[in-house]
Length: 145
Image 1: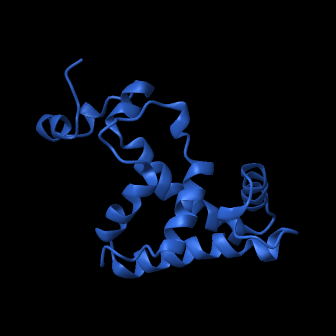
Image 2: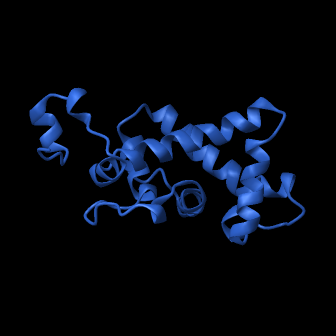
C-alpha cells in the first residue's frame, strides 16, 4: 500500500480520534516513538491494501458522520473535545451494533499500536518475555528484569 493513503483529511480525522481514544497523556511513552496516530500509516502499509483503504474510508465516515448524528454541522476534528466525546459515546452506547462495531474497529487499531510501546508495557508491568523469543524481545526494547 502506498505510504500516502492518509490524505490530509484522513490524517486530521485520525489525529482527532486518537486524541479522544488513546490515553497517551496518562502514560509516559517512549520519547523516540512517534504518537499512535503517526504509527497507523506504517501499520496499515504492512497489511492488505483493501484493509488500509477501508480504514481510510472509516476515518472519513467518523469525520463527516457528525452531520448525521449531532445537531452541529461541523466535522469531527473541528468539534470541541467535549462534543467529540459525546459523539463517540453515541457510537459506544448505540443500540445498533454496526455503530458500536465501527468505533471498535478504530479503537482496536489505535490501542494495539499504543500498548505495543515498550515504555507503556513497562508502566503497566507487562513482560512479554514469555511470548517472544529472548532476542526478539530485546530487539523491541525489552530489558532484563
